[in-house]
Image 1 (cartoon, rainbow, N blue to C red):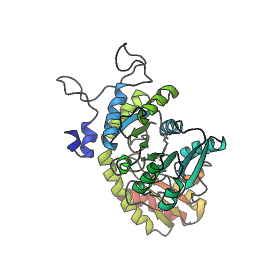
Image 2 (cartoon, rainbow, N blue to C red):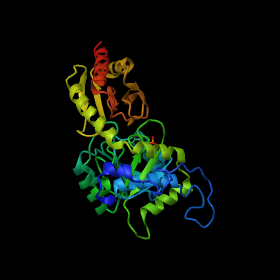
Image 3 (cartoon, protein in one colour):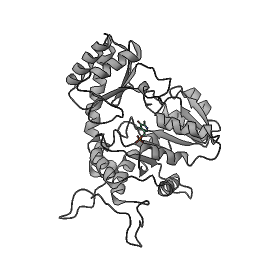
Length: 359
Ligand SMILES: *Cc1c(COP(=O)(O)O)cnc(C)c1O
């Protein structure tokens, strides 16, 4: 029956214990390092019932088998550890800076060759997949909100024999399901939209469910166990609790983002708005460079000046305040993570802050 229900319903119905009179509706937080012998799990690095509930929901939504990790970057590292020595990687030229940093370290050490591409230039990405071992995609990208043609690129990547990984953090499985579009593995920073309350760090990988001797999910599960990048049960419990409301949170935040992107485009302090037309992330380039953009973040009262994204609260930051951010990201770019507050309150606060940028 589960497969016939809509994703917004499966967010609610999945990952629950069997209905038993007198028993709780939710899985408990299982704090355990060791389990009685002869069961499916013996030691805590191999599994945990609280992880399983979260993984069941996310795996069902993305259409594969899910594994929770200590963070989005722990999940990223697990994938990169599958790369053969000297492997060829196709990667976005701008994307989440941590993933690009991991790739740069591999390249600097001579352990990988990285081909950087503009993910929105499909022909160039397809061309770069020739001879690749790994195609690393992010769409929409962080923080420029570039969108990739996942269907065309995954087809080329798979034809080249590469493993195709898509960071789906900004879209969530409610808006985009990369496995259905041909990807092998989906990555999420569950720190962001999936958990949605800016109170934990968590990552997750979802791999296409296949039954071969060399199943990628088995290799990733092994990496999680031996590298030790496992999540705490409390974080996973909170993430599952947050995931239950993803449908309504995203619906509201997306409606807010759509409206704010439109209004931002009409503000004289804004040079360029980047909004892919879906989701709750957008970016605005402010006239007057870094200084003007800094005046905006200094003047907000309802919006929060902070890094990270995907929470119920609206937040913004000038990405280039971080030395690790790509120089391809304009100095004046503000990344906006739109929350679920009243849209007129959000606009009143943002527009008065933008007025400050005009000086
Ligand atoms: C934050 C983020 C990550 C890294 O996740 P952590 O949970 O912070 O380790 C990866 N990808 C994207 C798109 C992100 O925004």
